[in-house]
Amino acid sequence: MNWLDYTIVITYILFFLGMGFFFKENKNSKDYFLGGKSLGWFPLSLSTMATQLSAISFISAPAFVGLKLGGGMKWLTFEFAVPLAMIFIMIVIVPPLFRSGVVSIYEVVEKRFSASTRLILSIVFQISRALGTGVMVYTIAIILQAVLDIDFVYTILIVSVITIIYSWQGGMKAVVWGDAIQMIILVLGLIICLTIGWNLLQDNGGLPNGFDTERLQVIDWNMGVGKGNDYGFLPMLIGGFFLYVSYYGCDQTQAQRLLSSKDEGTIRKLLLANGLLRFPVVLVYCIMGLVIGGLVSVAPGFLEEIVATTQKHFPVAFEKTGIKADLMLPVFIMKYLPHGLIGILMVGILSAAMSSLSSTVNSLSAVTVEDFFNRGKAKDSLSPKKYMMISKIAVVFWGIVCISSAFLFGGSKSAVIEIINAIGSVFYGPVLVTFILAFFSKKVNHVGMNVGIISAVLINLIFSKTMQELLHIDLGIHVFWIWLNFTGVIIALVVAYGVSALTKNVKVNTLMEVNFTLKKKDFFIKEVYILVAFFIVIVVFSFFLPNLLS
Image 1 (cartoon, rainbow, N blue to C red):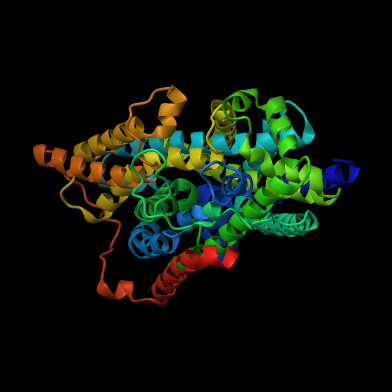
Image 2: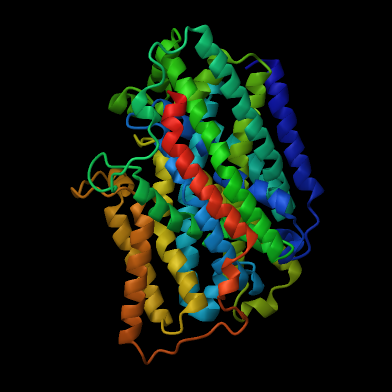
């Protein structure tokens, strides 16, 4: 990087610090955590996508497609369940959740079950989201360390401190509008990398035999059980459905955007936009990975540069595999892009990281304040001024926790995009079941629900390959992590109903504030038709994609 690149990056940083100052007028919880419930579908939909399609996708998805052993275009199967999940959320999850009028979605859980259930679910969310965000911060540290050649500790602080400051100042409005701008910058960065990568591939004579046919395959019919059986069609569709329903509908990070909407019509629009736009964006990620991965095999010195960078900055990964696949894109940026464009791409990477971190920190602080300080008897004595003070302290606290958790994953041999999804999959199933039973069950009590949540999380942890790797154990049971979303649902359901049947003397509460019953007409709305049609289109398109690219 030279003076031009640094000027672009510094200007970007100053802009976002100024945006936090611009949105600093927040009087209460609705302002600070829900943007005054005044936000429209367009910035919210961009913010929703920016949080999910973060630096993890920008860096690690192309590396998975183009360079990782066993990777390839099969990553696209992760998107198959998105349109179906959006339908379920807008029909089943949104109406009762939005009408409840809460800030922390776990307040609904307390009203239906008990304070203990709310705290258990809140803690589950906080642990899983802090760990997952640590993975994201770690990913950005990889890039900045390789690009700037400065210590890992400082690269983490560069991203995190800036994000914490503007999130601390501006609250949800700063987060959402920041995410919207960052999503646009991210797409621009994708187009730049894809265009330059393709031109360089042609300048180096192209690929003698075209793209690797194994990497072109999207749909695989394996069932996700046993070594090497990953990314099968049914596991990705079933497990992915429960993952996305739980993440977008029952995870405070995303649900907070739903609650920030003007009305339920706005939510349907943002969910429709997310269901339609994710696949094209991820398709660009994947094709970019194919192109740059192909360039690695033909461009002089590209592979050697990645290996040398791995050896220099990641000796543990070098000893295990000889290469850190996630370095493919940062090395490409530094080796082949002209100055000025390097600065723009660094801004794109920073955008992706800051959008995810700001959303997470804001949501974690909202849950902490609402679930631990603004409930029960303490709610009446918490003045607006004290509420805002605690909220801002919570933002800083969770920013520090997320920074700290980044150091946990530095030695993992898995691509970070797999680690972050594997972590979430341990928790998503039981979280989803808790909300579904809160809205629609009249038989499950809080004892059954508490035991169901804890049982499902513990069993999923035992079978999680990622957790086994981190703990250096091997139970000899290999289940692809996407299934954990499904097993979490089944275990939590069975245990919750079973324990509730054994404790019939425990009172079952009802959600008096939520007046909602599923009706047949709810399923016959235009958004449903559009998303079902889109689901069919992307599956058929993915089936024929290898022929189109070969």
